[in-house]
Image (cartoon, rainbow, N blue to C red; front, side, top):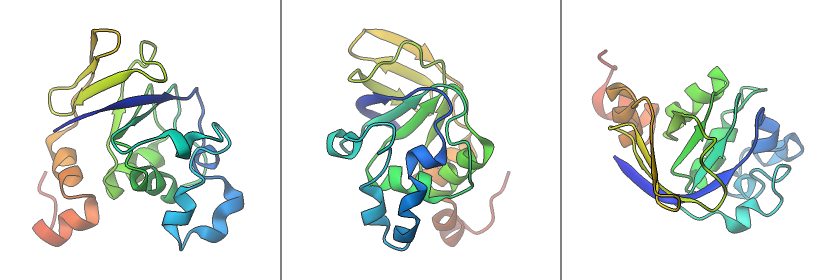
Length: 165
């Protein structure tokens, strides 16, 4: 499982309110419309610039705050290949995997907005194609890759039944 795209970098403590501002809560039943406001408070132009396959990259504690799964869903709707951060809030991490959005823990200091990267999920390698460098990361566990390959936990369970660990 590999993905190639551009980096959109954010800092530490990006909350679920940064990802999808609470003032748009009324759009939660219209996810396509809600996605138009993703990352709006961190970068007002984000949804105009991001393309399918791109990566959201951040510092520590990405996804802190409320447990809204909409935060992970809207990034997936926009076509984000993965979120790469130094650390994640546990509930965001779990929600992301559940909805089929890959999340990778990595040292993001050598990744910058505009860099083109390739992420090999199984091997645990990020290749920064712009800077010609390679970063090792902990590969995702096989069970998570299986869930992601099915588009999320619900799809996985519908197709395979219970998860065998």
